[in-house]
Length: 202
Image (cartoon, rainbow, N blue to C red; front, side, top):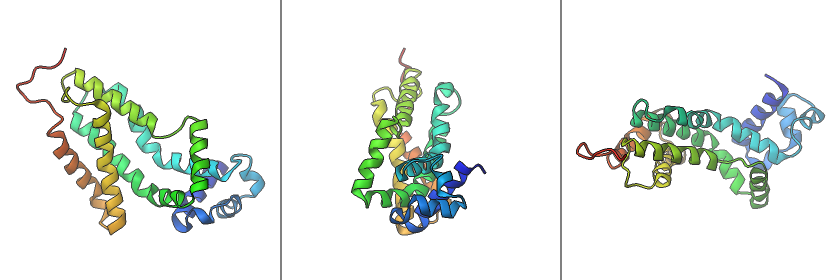
């Protein structure tokens, strides 16, 4: 692993084990086995460390959403949305303790949000890609055209967040989480997919 990768992994480990209160450039450098001066070559602040750790966790989900434009009209809508929702479930399950720590420190949370805005990073980009994918599939007649694309995107992600949050809070077996996500999504899709007697929208 590169020095940067070691630092990101150390940040994630400290956040999950000890929470945000114990996260510092000193604790991260010690956990990663590098000097603080080496850390500052990659990250100037604790906020930057946190942002990198979250980006690392969300990478699998982001890669799937980035591929959505190339998958319009291909394969099964149900399978594509299921893959996306399950990937988001795994992200939320891992990031849950980090988000909890972040909200426990309002001042740090605001600095973190400011850094995200400054770098134009955050979940809104993935949500926009998903919404555009939904709209394109609606025009092909593969998703109910009467529904707002943004609302459909919200629904798909809400299913993942709900199950990840519940599994984490009550201790349900996370290995069964993806099946629960898929089952709930299928139930939602019964109102999203067009009826056989409906003609595709030109």
